[in-house]
Each structure stands twice: as structure tokens, then as C-alpha cells.
Image (cartoon, rainbow, N blue to C red; front, side, top):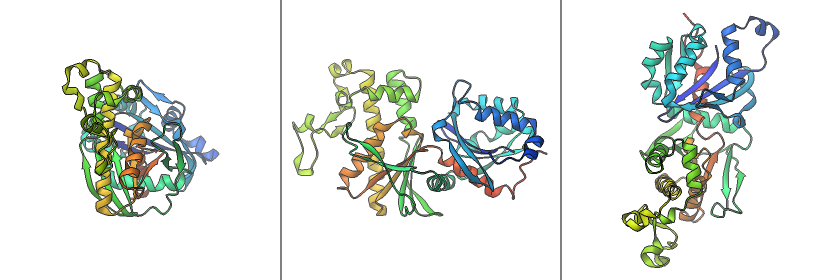
Length: 365
């Protein structure tokens, strides 16, 4: 049985695959041909079809999982391509090896019928927030320099990533930015609760960018934003006050009204797609940062961990969040980030599988 953890999100599906490396000669000889095909296909490629990708740079080698040693591989594809994934499972005869697989995320419920009908597989579903926390704890403790923060985030020339020791993290806040956003206060390995959230997340940014700029992929949206200037779209404090609002320590360059210039026809006509993408990214990031800070104040927590695929290839938002947390808390709060960003739910699901494999029957019937 291949060891998988699957997190089926609203925008992306994430897959963590454990590849044993301590296989004996006897195991190699007796390994089922179907299992060999699946293993070779997954680890022998970096791309699967037009949209599936393996994040090679995130591979974790020499890991101990379920009493075996091997490598963890991290794979993702758009959830909109789920039918293609199901066809792949069918083509590789996956159901000849197993009758059930483990999954988490909303899609584990949405696509449960499709897995059973098209591939003959049952989904064993696990709570996505339980998996998220379990995945964060495993990866951080087994991957050197997983956690980091940005030093001088507001200075493009001097900002650098700095490792952060996250071995004794409690309490901390997790801000999971996927299609939407969930905020969790974590006070122990099993002591956490969801304290807030918002529907304005990564899916909102990508959707608005598609509408406003005609971009086709998340990477395209981020690339446009990296070349844009939100100040042509957003109304700043200095546009209203003529300078800083000194009484409340608001710099003139602070955004006072997101998209506030767009009620002016002349400004609309002179605004580029790049500027619109940057303003959209700034708007969503500022909103997430504001919610995160308020939750941290309410819960009396200083460390805020931002995770989720919204942060993939998105240093703009990371630095905005880091700057905002540091400024508005007078240095009392620290924004932390993790290298594996959106894979923690899938990793936690794999850990649930390993822990549950004795309780469930995963062999084919």
C-alpha cells in the first residue's frame, strides 16, 4: 500500500507521499508490479499532466515514518482537475492495491462519491484542523530551519530570512491562508481552538485578479503584482491629509482606502493590470493581517504563524504581514513563516493514516 496523505482544498489538492528507502531485497522482489509503477511514476516525475507538480525543493529525506525510513515527497494540483487525478488512479490500477485512502479538507466530503463511483475507493476522512496542527508539529521538528521570520521586511535591499527556533512554541496563533482563512489559537499539541476566520483569502485574491487582469494562474497573478504599484489604485493617508496623520502615528504612505482612487475615471484609465494585481494583493493581505493582530491581542499571544498556499511564491504578502505585525505591536508580536506552507494538512493526514492503519482495513477486498 502506498503511504499517502491527501488534503483536498477549495483551490489546491495537496498530496504527501512517503517513499520507503529501507526496502530489503526480498521486499523488492515481492513488491507488486502495480505498486512499483505508482512509486516510479510519482518519484520519477516532477510534473504530472499539465497541472500536477512535485515540489522537489521541499523533499524531506531520511525520515522515520511508521517504523520505516524513507523520503517524503510533496505534490500538488488544482482541485478543479480532480477528474484527471481520478483517471490517473484508475489507469495505474490503484484500487487493485487498496480499497480506502485517507483524506482531509472539504473536498474529502465533496468528492467522496466520485472516488467510490469512478475508482472504487472509499475515503477515510480526518478533521482538517487536527491534521494541520499535527502536520506543523511533525515537519517543524524533522526539517531543519523550517520556521523563519523576515528581518527588515520593509526594506527590499536589506530584508533577509532568519531561522527561528520553534521547538517550544506554545502558545502561538496559526493563520491558515487557503481559499479562505482560519485562525487557530494553539496552546498545546492537542489544545487548540478556532478563534476566527474570513472568507477573504487566497481564493479571493486569485478570483479578483482573474476578473481584473485576465490572468490564468496564481503564479501569473503574483508576477503581475510584483511589477505593480498599488498607490495608483489605493487612496493613501497623504491623499486625504496631505501628509502624515501624526496624532495616531499613521504614515502618509499608509493605505487609507483600498481601491479608493478607482472612483475617478481618469485614474481608472491610467491604471495598469500590474497595479490592479498589486492593489488586490495588498488589500487581501492587509485584511488578513488586521484580523490576525486582533486575534493575537484578544488571545494574548505574541507569535503568529502564517501558513497556506497563498504564501507560495508570495514574498510580497509575507513581508507586508511581517512589517504590519512588528509596527502595530511596537515590536511585541512576531510574524513567523514555514517553508512547507500549504502541505501541513496533507502531512497530518499521513500521520493519521500511520496511526490508524492498524484500526482500519486498507487492503483491497
